[in-house]
Image 1 (cartoon, one colour):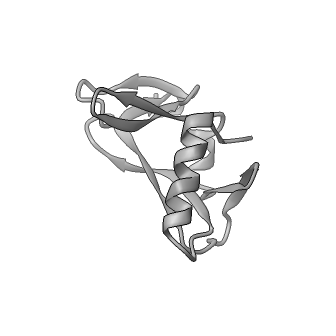
Image 2 (cartoon, rainbow, N blue to C red):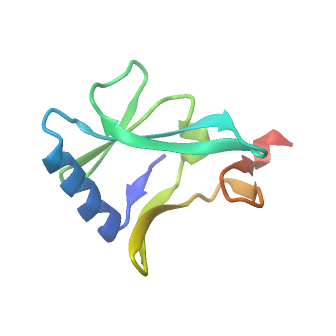
Length: 111
């Protein structure tokens, strides 16, 4: 089981962490929402939660709660630059379908 950061995302997360003293790493998971069922949640981790799985990539820790882990297992987080902005994208092998607006997704276990 693992969650990883592509090089561009790793660099961006490092910058976020440098700008936020006291942050432990990246918190990544999902919550139920949207028309398809799951939505990604990413933020800086201020503390470690009970049951968190922590992945270390170079000097960055990625915290994933135990409920989210089966849904995001194998995900690579990347940062894509487009014209005047940038956004994180999630390459999740567990996604079966996405809603039309791109805000949520379903997995095979939701059948």
